[in-house]
Image 1 (cartoon, one colour):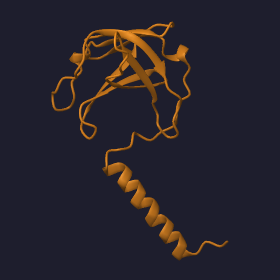
Image 2 (cartoon, one colour):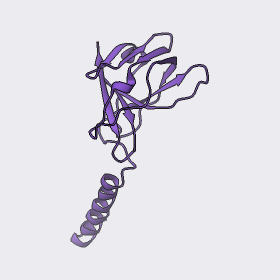
Image 3 (spheres, one colour):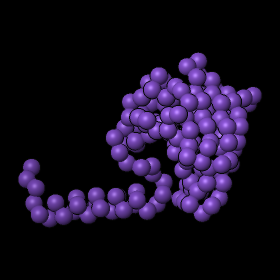
Amino acid sequence: MTLTWRSFGRWLAVLLLLGGCACCCGNTGPVGFAPDLDDADVVGVWVSSEGARLVLHADHRFTTESLGDCVDADGDYAPGGDGSGTWSLGEPEFLDPYQQLTLAYAPYGESLQNWGAQDGEIVYLFGDTDSGGICYFTRD
């Protein structure tokens, strides 16, 4: 099969269209190398610059403190606060730089928030999917 300029142009147009939709529609996550974290990579104490705190224990228990101190670019505070329950780490997904971190709050076992983990960083995503806030956590 030979690639002509015409077919190259068609493929380029398709790629640009798909890339533009992914960037503008707000329904895809950030693109980057997929991490491959183990549970041991995220166990520990994590803090945000706003003073929020996340503690992930090796036995898959967690506690959160002061999540409501996280603020987005518009000055809106994050929902949430103090809580505890169990956590789990999802499988790496292709071209998503964060692995899903699920926090299931006791006593109901519901995951009410979006969390992600990568090497040396955990993020708490809150608010609207198009213009929501992100609270970054690093090891304490």
